[in-house]
Length: 212
Image (cartoon, rainbow, N blue to C red; front, side, top):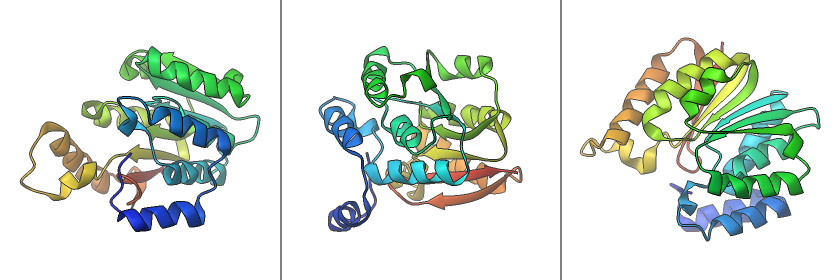
């Protein structure tokens, strides 16, 4: 969980605007004890995603990279009981925590978890989806984006996480593979006339792409 805000501003945002449900707070606290805790999205990002999902009337949600389930839980808690989700991840260990919280929230029967490489899962998934969230292994982001364009309906939204990549995308001296991928992907998205586009500099940066 990264933030480009100063600690006092980030703290103020959580105190002034955050409406994190108790179950999400418990999941966040449990995840914070894990070695890969930084994979978890921030509560303000979860709140934003839930609002986005509700605003566009999401009935079918697709998630690439579930980890312990915070993002899926934040989205599904914001939606009516008719909404469903498909979540893709490679870790049985971490998604076991997600399953536990989905069950507690009464969502287990509405969330399908597909374990295995996301590209393999995407080849088997049929749309249309209203909302997709990309937060999985970084090298495959361009492939995930193209797959989501195929699966998300016109007027639907694709959310792409980590597009600021801890600020490295703005530093020309940083040339590691993931940073270069994000720079190229961001440029490609900017020029992609198949979507309407905006960047929200919350957490580690989220691209919002509305499929035309």
